[in-house]
Length: 224
Length: 272
Image 1 (tube, each protein chain N blue to C red):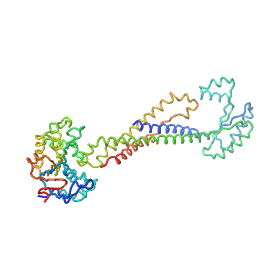
Image 2: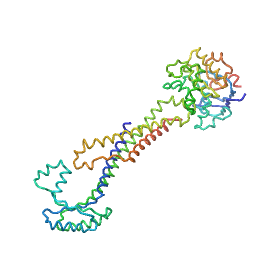
Image 3: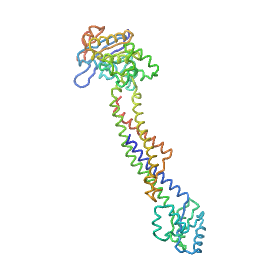
Image 4: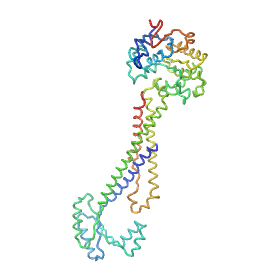
């Protein structure tokens, strides 16, 4: 299977003398479902942010779908991000816009006409079982529903890569399992899914592959 | 938007004043006239002699003799509020005059001045008045009004620039989360910036549009409430509406200022 993400000796330093990431070399194949786990401050979010170019590593190379993303100029980063779907712990919804508009944002920025948006937004919401709330505002939804809207937004333009940073952090166990189940479903449709989490229960129940980080370093068999 | 409106209102008011002065100058310069005031009690023969002397000048197109009763009538018509003053005098204070309309509007001042000097020595001519001085004064006042308007308005336009810049900055802060989301889903910088630029342009345009409406209101209302109390100055201190070009320039100025204010703010505060 071809590689989706290749990290070669990636280092990241925010402030001397400590390193948020230390010599990370990691390969993730296309269509893989992978957890990145570790305690708070281990570098999970930093690693994820370097993958979607929110952060620039201090050293190293990052290749996504065969393309060195560190060579992409800042003005063209949007092209990389349109190939990804990103889900956050705090959902990051636009509360003064309806669910339809929230989910449709990736299509809107890509220039899709509104009438074509309707079908794709509806399909994305149906996948997360929220199509009946398409015209609601996020404030009228539960936390679990809000996170599902965020997931629908992440998948609406059929990205090849889904990145999720603690997507179940604000949810109870049952809802957390439901959300991870959705990611599994997305993965079955062919997307590569990477989830950062420190929830051992989730990992125990759903893990296919787990990458462990501690103090910015890979540990366990990934470190070999 | 109040400051924006005020800044363009000031520019517009002074432009309007300047337009009026310019109009007056044009009217005056259409018929350059030298007025020869005759001595009181001049005989008919001497009067005819003076008129002949004036008419014989190559610079003069035609002359008009204005006897004292006609001068008094003209004064009463022009300044009705001063009728009582004249009536109180008990006699007609106005001398006879001869108005000489000049042929060539572009005649050298030196030639006309020489003509006037020669006429001063003619028996029966008491005083000479040339309205070209007024034309130059009107033009000068017009330029001054314009300059003052641009100076004062310019200061306020600068203030408006910073106000728009701050308004956009506050909007950027208020929509920080939304902007962040747009970045993360792959919006281009242009996609993010354009709504703020449009907002800046709209603010500037609305402000200058309101100022135009206010200028129109002032021009309509001024003659009723203040114009007549100015008496003889009413013609000078009056407003003439802006031309199409000036109005469009004002609107364009508002839009440009709004755009620049917004752009300045985005460059400093929107790091994308």
